[in-house]
Amino acid sequence: MGLIEIEGMEFYAYHGHYEEEQIVGNKFLINLKIDTDCSKASESDDIEDAVNYQTAYKIIKAEMQKKSNLLENIAGRILDALHEKFKNVNSITIKVSKINPPMGGKIKKVSVTLTR
Image 1: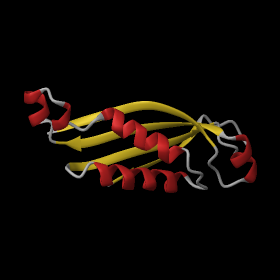
Image 2: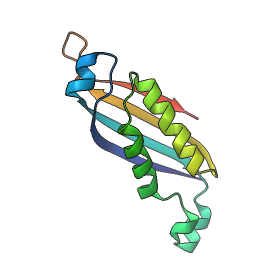
Image 3: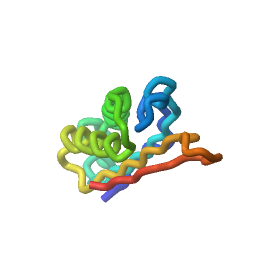
């Protein structure tokens, strides 16, 4: 078994419940964990036997460009798209964080983590 992690993916996007958020935008951070069998790739050294990290990043980037009101929706769409592409994984965990959310106080970030 193996755990593939892509950490600290940064995007500027226009997600949020409030109209201002969808106009001004905000910075988002994404962390991804994919639990999968890495034994074949570890022996073959062939990308065809592995979860392609670049493909995973491109899927996440495409989903981040689609507006959503809620972090839960973003995370769910990303999970759906990754599971559609990578059918042989055991589970995927995605953490979506909004930096400096407009909540009326000083808040570093708010995050939603989903696993499927």
